[in-house]
Image (cartoon, rainbow, N blue to C red):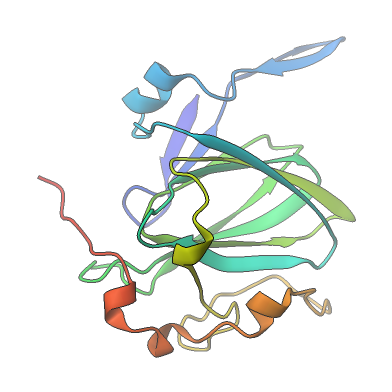
Length: 189
């Protein structure tokens, strides 16, 4: 497998090895030791899937406390996937990185704890799957507006008008969130 850092430490693009022939293909989507050796030393406790149609924008979301690291991938279709660092004291606070995930490229995106996460569906529909390092705790959920002008996320909307949940449409700007609600950055040793 090939693992590529994405401009903010700990955010990784994973390209699993694909073995294919005239019958189809096979890949190892998770193997604890191999992923740990490549910077994703996580204990996953929950797997989630979401199906969405073109133009659906889900995010930006996280939990704090009970933060979740997420290993995300697309099983059907294509999405534009975003990770945004909101760790207090982080040298990368407010910076984002993004990648396109698709059933064709079979890539995975590691979004560590302390990052807001969101995605935009680019294909007619998409089946999105992700592994989480903590259980869902709705009482600790935190959302930030997807189009916060201070963040400058360059969503590839073209002429699409995003399809949003009420929660995402009414989410506050990052600057409106009390600093105490955000996780802290812990520098590496």
